[in-house]
Length: 402
Image (cartoon, rainbow, N blue to C red; front, top):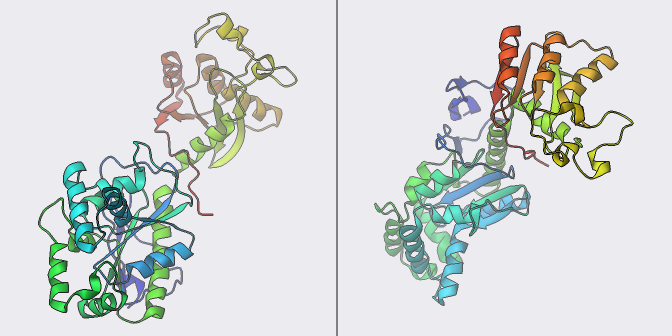
């Protein structure tokens, strides 16, 4: 069965089915199913560190430990939701058994919410996202749908389920004898599993979690086949991650403006600007003193601050040339026409910059929606036929795979 038969069409950001071209990739194994992408929550949890995060779930003995080890060898940090419960049991001085792990986990979900373990895995004990030692993270022991729902608000998150015949799973756990598992009969083993598929929304609901997986792998054919399917799942996770973080053109150039702004020498506000035409960068500019002139960093203070001058005035006393002005000046210095160009800027241009933008022939200006608006500039643009758009600040972390 090839990839077209195994892969359902995924929805792009506009809700339309995206059809990927055939790039000659190897056919997907019949033992792996790539499901339709799940909808994220309306308010996505920002992934500020740009981590590639993969979750692994399965019924006991199906092979999720082997799957997690596969990802660890790929350079992933390992996080286990069960380890969070184990830590709580150790603090209590309680024995660590399968029953106690389940009971304590359910207790924590009732007290702190059904997604508490997933939140602890990502947030730690604070309100801020934790920083992982690696750019890639694999999360084990996901057992409640609310945990999945929280993790699916993280851009690029992929959940992988491992499936295996119950008799084979029983034989595996009998051989490993971990946390009192090996003393069970097959009937007791099945009865234990029923406890892990509760109707209580704050308890373990493993089967529902498995049904929420983005990728399902059957582990009935031996290690070599299983490893091959994990490679396919890993590639699919990278594709999902890359699509989640891939910038559109406006985001792309606005994000570059932030890098340009890092060259600013103004002590009040760092501003960056980029002039673009046909998706090609023409010039860049940042706010700072003219060439061969000392700037505020050299002086160690801001003249306007010393004179108690507010923003939007006293430009003749300021040492800086604005970012937009520098972008236009650079174009003039190098004989580059800005006719019909788009100017991207971290902030709404002031009126003086606005006049220069109009006369330079720039037809579109895009800035962050957090920047202070200059109503006079916006009115000027409207009269001169210059389109002005404000865009949300994109994730400013560099989200790439190294």
